[in-house]
Image (cartoon, rainbow, N blue to C red; front, side, top):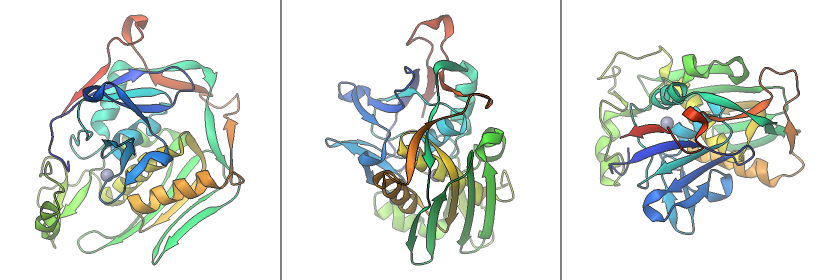
Length: 292
Ligand SMILES: [Zn+2]
């Protein structure tokens, strides 16, 4: 998306309890766990950095993994930025479904929110509150033609694939030159983003009437994955973005009284952790292959 560099991504199963880990195969398999302490940059996309090694635009893959209930995976890539694909998380979801997702012999551990944590900056707001499951209420207010939209989703209801995954990123034609001058969106185009002028999408039609706010929910799920475990609580976001999402993660994680590591109760639909499945049970065979 931003670098325009070609990249191949492979998703490999990982043992229960290991979480989501990025691995740079072009840099001696250097690993960067998907956790908040490695957040490096948050304008226009979320990037992680550990010991000077960068992984850019992590949010759509992380969103697909959390949305599909995957807890443990190694995401191998041979360049610094994840593929943008069609600007949504749907190709990731399809790749995961094509190899399958398997249950692991360990009850899922979540970050259970115990008391509210909020971040406010001007008219932007985000907060997370105690509550069962993982629910998100998001409202946005962008210049025309987007305007005001809001969406509410309960991830426990397995709504991700149908309602969120397909929502694409969007950008205004008027901002294009400025962003390119900043060295951003070098890989962007009408095949991987909704491009807007004042009247509407120039490369329509939209996949959903409220595709814009659905994409913000998609981004939020991906950024909150950096808590290191699936969130158990209710999130409210107003006019937020990557910077607010990741600020909430670091404020939450630092406040040790605000959450606990908890096990999903037995009796819930799938209390076990999940990883991408492999054929023939070869630990690192048959990965999900995603080119860009
Ligand atoms: Zn996005």
